[in-house]
Image 1 (cartoon, helix red, strand yellow):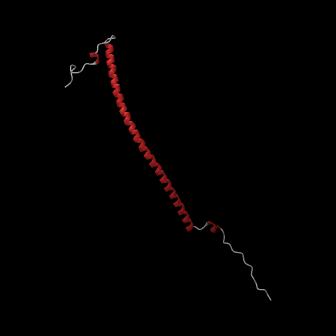
Image 2 (cartoon, rainbow, N blue to C red):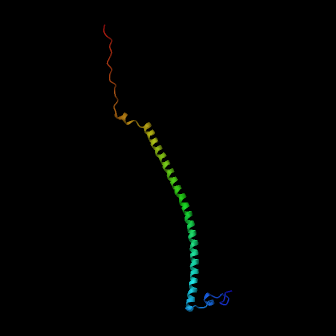
Image 3 (spheres, one colour):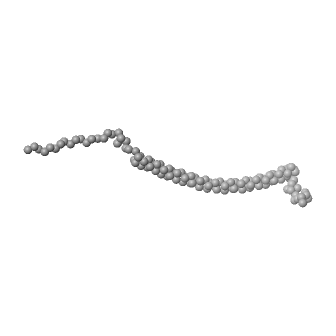
Length: 125
């Protein structure tokens, strides 16, 4: 059932005696009080929203911190694995060159002949 004006409690303007300024001042005061109550409700709603946002930001900071540590660890692992791969490739190249290619100095230099030794003859008697 909808409330009729008879079922509702009287407003402040209906129960108080008008001040010396007249009826308009009482209505303005009633309006001001109503507006202050609405502002208080709005501020309470905003306070709850800010509390929720603050909690979400804290959770987000924690997630970003974990992500930052994970990225740092991944970069370290990639650097170590990359270093091992480069070392392995260089070692394999050195082994291949040592076993399959003649040394360039051996190809470029002509073979050397040792100097002839003087003949040793027995003394004639």
